[in-house]
Image 1 (cartoon, rainbow over the protein chains, first blue to last red):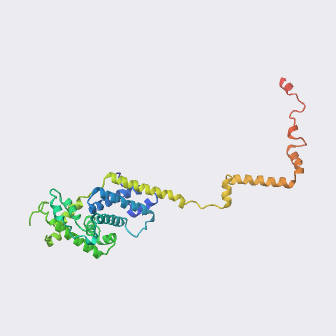
Image 2 (tube, rainbow over the protein chains, first blue to last red; image 1 turned 90 degrees about the vertical axis):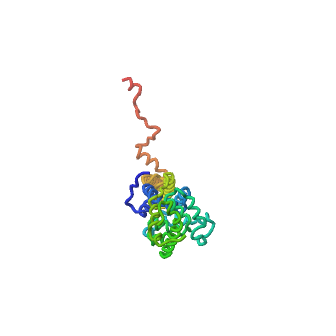
Image 3 (tube, chains in turn red, brown; image 1 turned 180 degrees about the horizontal axis):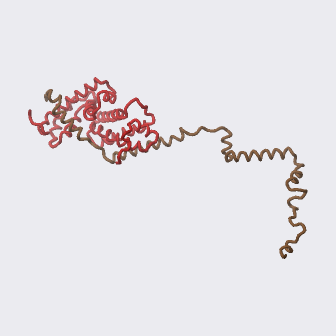
Length: 192
Length: 127
């Protein structure tokens, strides 16, 4: 893919240009937002093919609403984070066949799943541990600690309050730490 | 499993998170190509809709009539012919001879005009 020539232009401006028929804006937005959508989808779903499928679906929604985009109301990236994580949550819900509220804090079998992973590096270990979190916790942890969003931004993306975000990220981190605790030694950490 | 404050407040978990951030997953070129194709296809739909929504305001009856007869030049020619027809009508058919005479001259008609009344064409050619 060629260099994004419109790097200085905001996502919102690009989206308006795109809605007005600017082909360069279509390319720039794809190069800018495609990796973001894919990355978050993969963090949520843990499967590359499914993540690409979901990211494409989320982007398609963005393309379609471009002419009606209301400037100054929300960041394009926040909107995309919301759509991607909501779509991923829906898929996780269908995959598990249970409501998110009924999902266990740490799914049964998580430890054994981690035990099977012998040669994985820390990033892979974290991804595997993320997959064991309830969807909303996973969503909050991914946005906060992997995408680097602020709590208010996450609140906007998840359509919840900031306090709820703080609670979800704290519980998520606690669960992740619990899942990874047993892998410390084989992932390069000795006993204290 | 028992968690300690040390684990939560940094060190191990933060290392894992940092490792995950550094391991930035990148989408395939095929995915980006599909996403761009979607973007361009949807955008083409916008552009197809633009001429309808931004069409020039429609003109009145005269504009439409003018377009049918080839613009204002065509319409003015038709107006001239119409006025000429009216004049002929008012002047009366019995005066058509006078009118014709004013154009042709005398009482000769086109059928009896002799361009060489006293000449011999072949004689002239032989000279």
